Length: 282
Image 1 (cartoon, helix red, strand yellow):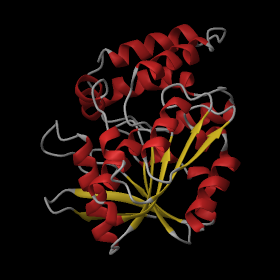
Image 2 (spheres, helix red, strand yellow):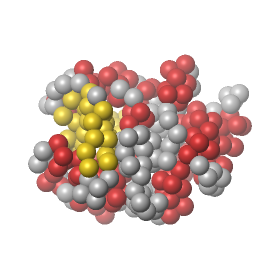
Image 3 (spheres, rainbow, N blue to C red):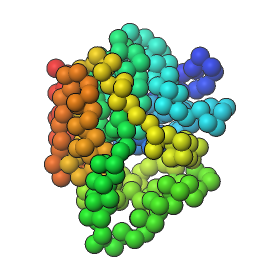
Image 4 (cartoon, one colour):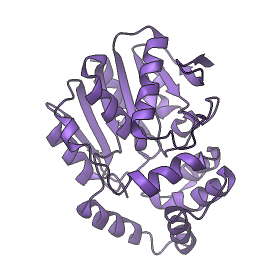
């Protein structure tokens, strides 16, 4: 069921509510994708009540008046708007990929407002060791018939060779096979289900944030019980990034799912649901 509310500055924020059980607020990645990015989150709605946010400028959520208002703190402020709307003093929070960056920022800024924190396929910074791992993971797909087109699309996206949401969506559909350990029918169906991402959001992130952001100094401020989960074959936020997070967050639990790539909730559906469900419910 899709619901919405007005933020303190008058924007509409929309979200999907799925399932029943302990409530888990969920923020997907990109940046720039709507809650469709999370799909059914590996069926976790069978045991949890999921609140799947459409981040600003996606799905049913209004674009901000300022086309540059897509910084990490902007997204985190929307999470707090949602918390207040839900009438909760504290929330359990899951973020995947860029959504995990937002979740780190939120949990470090408002440590008293997060009970449990799930950081899925995400990172505190992008650095040389992960860059080497990314190059190796990409090259592991060199035998695939789609490899040349996917790498060309990835390069074009990173260089900002897009103007509209539709142009970015076309590039993303071509490059996303690189983000899976194996690109089979379920993975293809997932990519085809995505809507066009918000070009303003990704353009700003690529040009001004990705290469320089560093949340390591914030990690020790997090007081939530934290699960860090990633795939062993994740092309961009793999075990190197998970280790840095779990080392920096007091008491964090780290889980690496063997044989899975970036989209662990698609590629390792049962294991992801079991790990996250047990962590949130306990």
